[in-house]
Image (tube, rainbow, N blue to C red; front, side, top):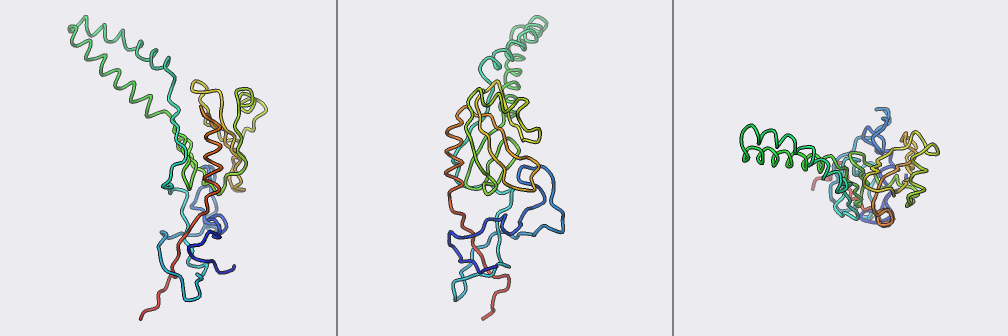
Length: 231
C-alpha cells in the first residue's frame, strides 16, 4: 500500500483498510474475528520529514462514532390524531378516580397519564439523522462510506417498495401514520445482509440532498507513528 499524505483529502475510507468493528454497516451479521482490524483512537500528530505517514499507523472512526456536523434531523412523531385518541383513552380512568376520591384526584391522575403518554410517544418515535460520518435511522447506523444510490420516493413508489416488489432482506424503518413518502438508500457494503434501506420521511428530497452533501465531504484522518523517536 502506498504511503498516505497526512491531513490531506486523498485518504482512503475506513472500509479500504477492512476496518470494521464486529458488525456490518446496518447492524446485521458479523465479520469473522480473524479478519477484523483493531483500531485505536484517532490521534493528531505531525507528519514525518518527507510529509508522509505509514499505513500501519492509520486510525479511522468506528461505526459507533457520530459526526459533529448534522446535515439533516427528523423525528417521526405520531400525527395529532394519535395524541388525541391516546388522551381520550385516559379519560375514563380519570373519571373513575374523580368519582371515588374527588375532582382533584381525577385531574391529578389525568395529568400524570398525559405526561406518561407524551413521554412514551416521543421517546419511542425514531429519529432520522445525517451527519458528516453516519446515517442513523432509529437505532440502526450506516457509515456514509457505504451509502450508494439514494432515491426520494413519492406515495406510489413508497407503497410499491413496501409491497411484494420489495426485497425481503431490506432494512425497513417505515411509519405509515407519519408519512407515505420516504427514501431508498443503497448499501454498498458487501458484508451487509441488507441490500438497501427503506426509510419513511416527511421531506424525502431534503434527506436525499443532505446525504449527497455529506457523502461528498472529503474525510480527513490524522496519524502518528506508533513508535516515536526519542530525542
